[in-house]
Image 1 (cartoon, helix red, strand yellow):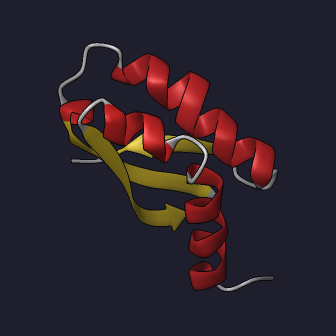
Image 2 (image 1 turned 135 degrees about the horizontal axis):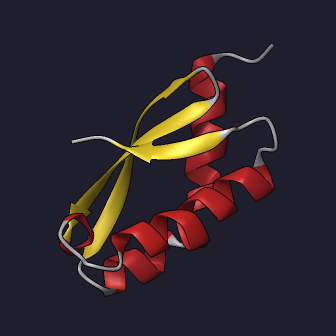
Length: 79
């Protein structure tokens, strides 16, 4: 079993492909924690109030993370 720190590093690396798109739109994403293989993230800047944020989470963030790290069960936003 890998350490939480290593898992978060892998998650951050998986987000590298979508993070430039978020930044271009005036936002970003921060990994807060991983609990029971569910990634907790916080949407920053414009992403936090964007009406498309639910779609971004499912079609972008969650898909990117789960493709890179199959043991991840899901992604949820926290405030």
